[in-house]
Length: 316
Image (tube, rainbow, N blue to C red):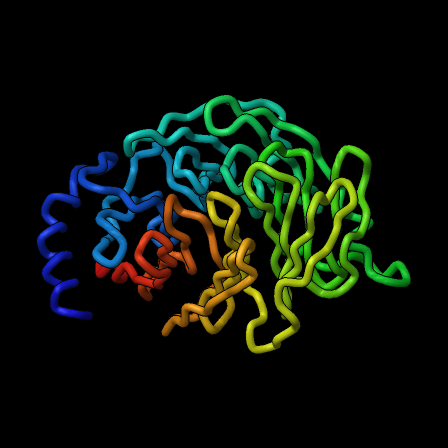
């Protein structure tokens, strides 16, 4: 670690570590710490950040997903109960919502965090109205989609899925291609294997990636497809996200993160010494892995040029 970064962290640490449940100083985002089963802030600025003390939720967590705008948390407690929290100024307040089928195994937020898709027991349920007024919405049965040929049971759901900001459409991408779900039923948009899918903010335009990258305009209508990158096995996608203004797509692979400028039709690869596991919006940053014994890696688009920075692993 460079000397200036060490000095910055030592200077920030005394003011950023505070009493449990309170956050002091600049907050870059929030993360779920699976080892400690708590929610924690990332304190400081990109390139000079540390993990803060836990935010008090009144329960131990088995999982938690934080919205891209850092204003809501969808959490499953250690006892298996599901909870929705509003986040504001580093404090969490639970919001009651009826009609959730059960604690989800996986969660995906829409680009702006106004909707989320919850996967549980071969079903995907949409929640809209986040963060202030969550409402349980449509549920889609994936059993036919997961059926194995010849009636030989069902495969395990490991696919990528994404939901539009208005909750009207859901995309699922996997070995069988890209499937669209909505009020009119479901249909296949892409027949080739894809490993990541994402909506653009505030629209029904989306992108799908595998070893190449497709832009799909108006998924519920014409679903016009534009190839942004040809197949390249060396850049197989592990995650896909859109910028807040919808002008960029960020494709994470084992090489790093490729930023695609949709207006200019150009892209550049920001390499990383890490191995990204995905890419998840976290305020103005994008998280590339989970909290653990290794550093937390973040894709930073706020600098003069995009870069990848890290948060040191927590020795505690």
